[in-house]
Length: 221
Image 1 (tube, rainbow, N blue to C red):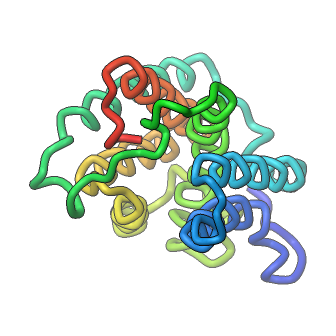
Image 2: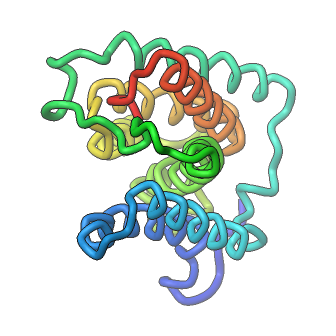
């Protein structure tokens, strides 16, 4: 597996920038809301900008050019369902960071396009940006700074657990987030294809969106 060439900051952009934009726009959401921007509209802006960054970085990220084989697809589908089951089972007070918040998308006046933007962010942008950052970059970078030269199947236990813990810290359901990080990380290590955990992550989020919309479980969204 070849190393990424170029200045250090430039080497990281395809793996880090989409995630940084997606999370950065989330961090400034309170400022946008203070300025009078509807949080549902801001989520659409966040999704759109991060998607444009992903498109701009796509050609420079070799991991996205390696589709999974049939086994990887089957594993991704199975893992996506498994993580959803774990997520719902671990929706418990003891497994959470503080009290859950009701999503602004629960409001009766939420428009269809706002729902569409929320689903696109969850099913397309988040899986790509987060798997690029946590699995493809961080998990391998923890093994060696020249991360692109690290075969994912050679990632050690320390890096594997750290990436799962940091992934968990981003989620209100922290125990479920840790379990998801373990599953997605294992998929990348086992198959060597980033598209396998991306597929699993996307399916988990799609099924979770369906659950939220049909069951009214807005605290999960």
